[in-house]
Length: 138
Image 1 (tube, helix red, strand yellow):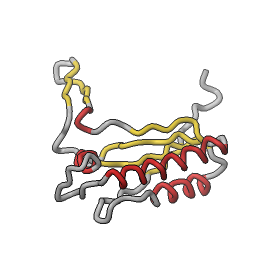
Image 2 (cartoon, rainbow, N blue to C red):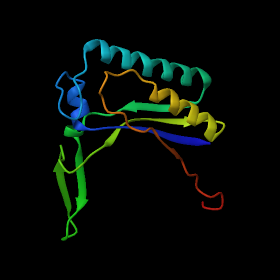
Image 3 (spheres, rainbow, N blue to C red):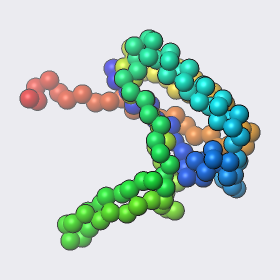
Image 4 (tube, rainbow, N blue to C red):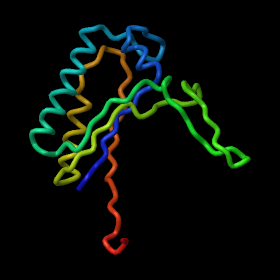
């Protein structure tokens, strides 16, 4: 079964990782960043070796986001980020092909063990099964 495993973050978190702490997110040191990348890299290496990883990506900060919505006139309305009304956004993801929900949950638990500075916010890891089209739809 395929799963989407998602990690969340905020603009303040991305800024904290650039050394700019705030009330909501403490500043990260270069050592903190290196520890995070080493942890995530080890997870990615293990998932690639096991054949479970289909794709994995970290996403750019929310300030680089663009929303495209439909206006009342039926035309596209384009708004560039950041968006003060938005709290957590998708910060990165894995697309995995795992034997069971229990296995992908083990992976999510490992993601939660990612080192970070004391006081940094901790977000849940979200697991969503990827639906498959019914066989009779052609």
